[in-house]
Length: 196
Ligand code: GRF
Image (cartoon, rainbow, N blue to C red; front, side):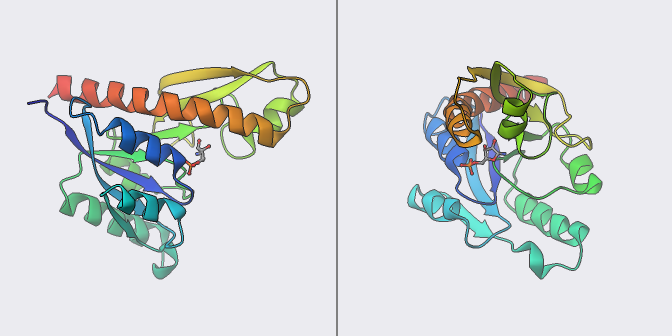
């Protein structure tokens, strides 16, 4: 039987990348087994879609905690209580504390809607269009203490077309994200499994 890493997905909203990962992980040969979806927002639509797919999904509202560190500590506790080995951020809109990032170093990945190292942070599509770029895309990367600055695992490019707005470009990039993230998470999980 294939060894699979117990994996959690952290979200804040819609969760379309989360859905792509859950779908990919339905294949018993996929090296990441999605055990938990965790959101810092109780209203995140992705919580309901994860539950509908039979995945445990919980909200830990960050406003319930006095500090970023206290919130992150609770997230780690929930992950560790379930033996989680790999964490995938998918539209998780919280900056994580250095302590959390160190605790999960090498086991924490994110998807970002730009061709990193270009455009870390927010408003990536508007910035790519304003710069006159001919292509945009998505990156999956390891999370380090540098925001959107960790080693890139995989990227997919899409063209920027005449007349694109931030919204039309975002939609094209999102389709690429849904292809890229399952492949990149599998690559990272397999590399982790080979090392142990
Ligand atoms: C995606 O564009 C992702 O790259 C960014 O936030 C968006 C999340 O979308 N970090 P979804 O919640 O996965 O649908």
